[in-house]
Image (cartoon, rainbow, N blue to C red; front, side, top):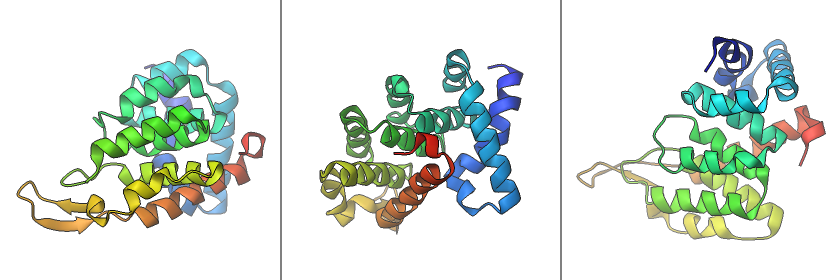
Amino acid sequence: MTDYIRERYVKPLYINVLYGNFLGLGKEDLDAFVDSTTVALYEVTEEETIQMYNGNWKDTITASWLCGIGRLSHHLNKIETLLIPSQTCYAGQFHCFALARFDGAESVRVLRSYLDTYLPAGDRQYDQEWAIGALWWLDRRHGTDYAQVYLKNSDNWKLRSRRGEEYGVLRPEEGILHFQKVMDFVDQYFPEFAT
């Protein structure tokens, strides 16, 4: 990964991509974020994208943000190899986003595989809320009901210690609502890539 890529694309974007922080930006910061994203969408090369996918979580979250908006679905296999093992923090959020934006049967397969792997949640609080949000969004677009399989069992979302003691719960409904806001944001601010 070159310093140029980090300075030009990653640094201006990743912190506002993380968690969908861009949803809470004021006008000036929002305009700067949208401008930086737009520049990256039109400038970043295939080689630079590959380098980002081979970098740290900040790099990969940025790559999936850009690939998702631009619907660069030829990166789906790389995203799958990063998402399913869930070896880095945070990046899975926007791997799920990219998969939803790719809008295909392979995206559904990968999201279901992720949820099959990480539900019930137990002591693994990863990106399950993002994955269910992405799967739910795809269900709404295609008239399918895959997400319901995971939503109907509330035990799927309980957080438990390794000793089995319940200490919290993931909130898939909030994940779905948040994910919808992220997708609406992209349609509003990047209409040339709208769904």
